Image (cartoon, rainbow, N blue to C red; front, top):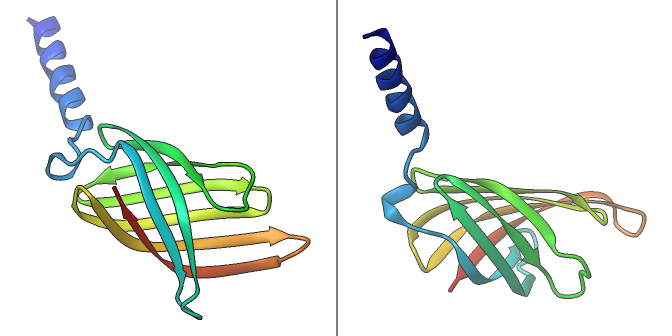
Length: 132
């Protein structure tokens, strides 16, 4: 009897931990995007974002023009909120936050943190737009 109760508790715990993504939206796939600097209105276009979603976990890459290496993205998608971060790569780290209401369009903010000899330490706040 205790074994059955233990198994039932384990099953309930696992089901609760595996929350479904918001409203059945799957963000997996290739997205086109842009960053628009809040301070100046200048835009960095032609971003390519590739995402892989498994439950609430989201991993992927971000390719930017003139940036030779893809940025690795890791984060979550839960209750309509997408949160992705990239570790510092060649002097750039990103934090992306967006509210997702449409499975084909995402809009939010991105913080670009620079720390390189050519740019020094700097942070830019941008508007993030993604579509597929």
